[in-house]
Amino acid sequence: MNRKLMGSFLMVVSLLLMVGCSSNSDASPEEKENADVFNETDKIVQEFYQAGFELNIPKVYSMLSPEGQDKLENETYVTGIVKDDGSKLHAQDMIQEEDYQNYKDKYSDQFKDFDELNEGYEIRRYDSVYNEDSKEVIYYVKPWRGSKFEDGDSNFISIKQNEDGEWEIQEFIDSIPEAVNDKDSGTVIHPYKETEE
Image (cartoon, rainbow, N blue to C red; front, side, top):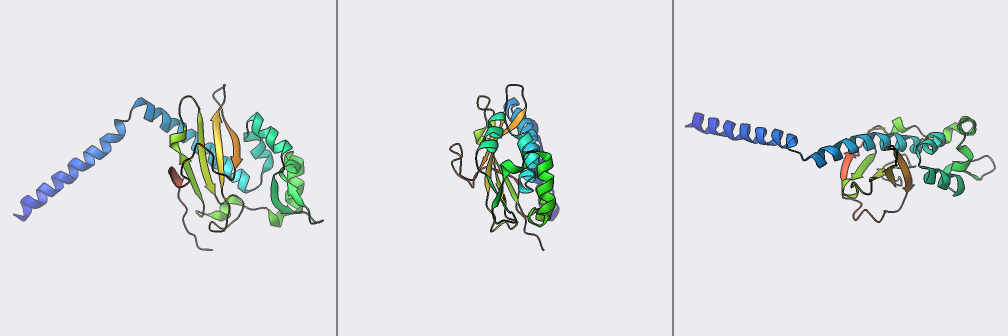
């Protein structure tokens, strides 16, 4: 009796595994296309997030759309770096590679290294925002400037495909975009993992 029960159990498990594995190959062409889009944008956003966290402003600037570059040039974006005279360093001051290197050398103790986060960060993608018309994907990242997940601030990153088919960062903002209904929804592409220090 036990053998029959065990055999039936194994058959059911095998069937479930077959159904589960075959469901991925049954994805619609749209789902497959979206998966390709998300694979590409996930990598770009990861790179942008790292550059932003490390205040590598020349790299951030190079990844922005022309509109995003204009905003970075003309709006005050405080970096959190405090100069010798007590004033705050602005991102506009570090757009040029030479200026960035000079500030990084002078205030090296105030610049952060993304690798020091280990796994202590989160990246979340809002899949429902993307469609063929908008060609936009929105992400949530935390921490943005702070090194501690619990104490760090967060940011939303909007990436959009331009007319040439290239993906550019439209903007990065600390408030929830209108297209995102719930900050805690979406697909977590890098879950926060508590790390020992």
